[in-house]
Length: 490
Image (cartoon, rainbow, N blue to C red; front, top):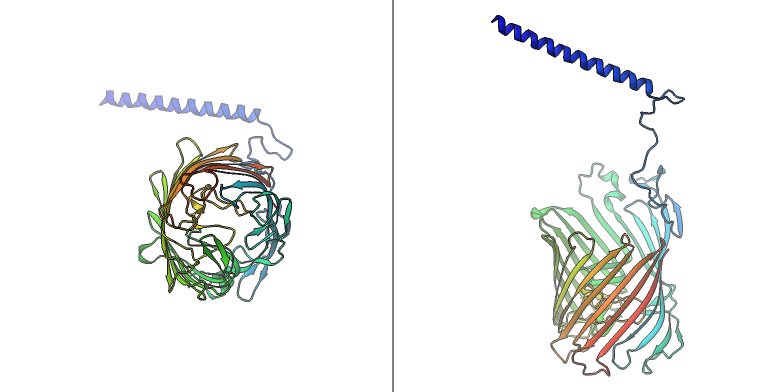
């Protein structure tokens, strides 16, 4: 026992000495540090954290819109107190004007008589946005350089059978209002009715002339339609993560699609029910539309089912759409089904993008409504099928789906911190019913290069070459096109 007590005593002495030595060293170091540090005029040491904030990144100044009144858009600083309404809402009015000016020199020759044209065309989209809050606003818009799918342009060269001769100027000035609508949330308009947000007043409302697009623009794609819509969001029925339900009624400026173009139908009325549901694995869209019109354009029912999901590292979207006339088939009201799918992914160790798209048209599918400038429903298939929305430059492979099957594959490169990009795409289509209007069997190769210029400009270069496999009507098997566009964001 005495030896054990002796060992414990020795260990206690060693620990005490170690603690004393550590305290001595720390005290000496602290004293030396205190002697070496400096103090500013306020008596603060140079090791004190500064009161001045240090930003994580050096962000450039925001570009200002054409007109900006009230709170600066995406600005910083103290917000105003606003205006309190009897409903309990607080409005902080702010107005800004902005727009996009597009001008292009372009030419296309589809090898068919009456299609060769070289022109310079322009389009100007001008908007005024009156924010009442961040959820309530009034938007007004004008498109002064185009109307009904025709654009202000100057023809440089054209086929003799076209109505516009060489060196002719086509003026399509239009000062009518193209967009004018109000949108808001009932819960934000009348917060006094539900201060704690427990009453379920989250209904969105939009009324006026407005753009509409459903099923990625395949079922309905209008840039200006007179309509009123009521949306209920954040529904969680049937085990869904989220659900959006929209009811829509449109009464004016409705455009109907046909085999060779889209046209205005003043007799049409449109009623639609649109849903979007989020599950754990996918987003599902289920939409139905009824269009009522006179006998010349016909009544019809239009429906669409879409599913978007991740398959590992791939993104996949499948859409099935149908059009079903009520009564006799007419040019704007045909029976058909369109199956459309897209698969895309990002290659490892890059920010680039690869995509594969395909479609199958059974019968003669028609969208419920389509603006004259957006072409047919196949624009989502790729740049070889998309309408550019400016002038008479058509899609390399067309964008109608009547009795046809086809698709495209493309690779998109990004350069210079995404300020430049290049898309190269190959595609083809086959019409399995030779009697179909606009029947065409062709393969094509296309490219698009875009680059940002400064903070408001974009340069766009497009080119394609298409080969008709069975050219029954054209004078040449090779079809070519190219364009150069300048886009200015104002």
